[in-house]
Length: 269
Ligand code: LIP
Image (tube, rainbow, N blue to C red; front, side):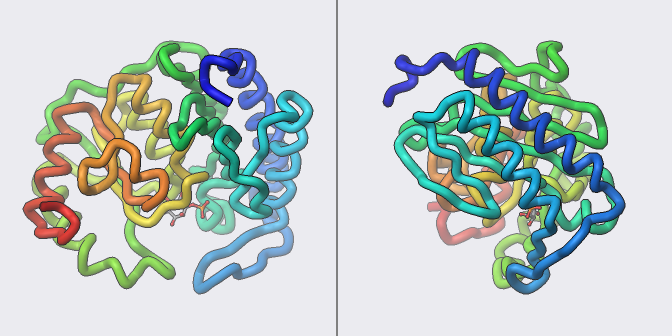
């Protein structure tokens, strides 16, 4: 299946409905997470994650039966064309009652995200974009910021939990970013870090070792809002598989790649 064969506007509409269905469940359960299971050290899944994923999957499967759904919690089929779903992005925030949580629905064709929705059920925000159609926040067009990095705030994510072994790689980048940008933010939900970067709220975002479901939708938002998305070595596609992402307006993106290189990360020649 190629992009040309897909009705991207129709599928984007289905993704919005799916994200809202999951969002309703997350909003209703906020503050009372229900049963929680530890998937790995410090890596939790709540009944709400699973219930949201099932609601998102049901809407997507009804709207586009030919497109398989792969979810963070219950997996599924990965095909040349299909959905990547994070039913509750920012689970740790959710369990702590911190309202920065998202529902992320991305459509990926031949390894490239072509449509995306990031919904923040506790904030009443829905971000949407599809290939060549621009990016929107609650229906209003959005663009990445034009602030220079020195006057900007970059979002980031710390290598916690099972990612701690990469702290040595991350810390020199963090230190250089702290002196390059005006300030940094660690909000705890990659999909919203990307959406806010697309909307010019943040002036960049960098994090390592994310799942494809965390970033697929948000990356389309940044790209369609005039930003650049690569991995930490500047590769325009590898971030979806290696999970190391740098997303920002062009000037800040080049600065972030420079400081990653300067921080002497081995994968940057
Ligand atoms: C989270 C991301 C966050 C990252 C966490 C985790 P989850 O996703 O949104 O940016 O720092 O490690 O990956 O697990 O809440 O869906």
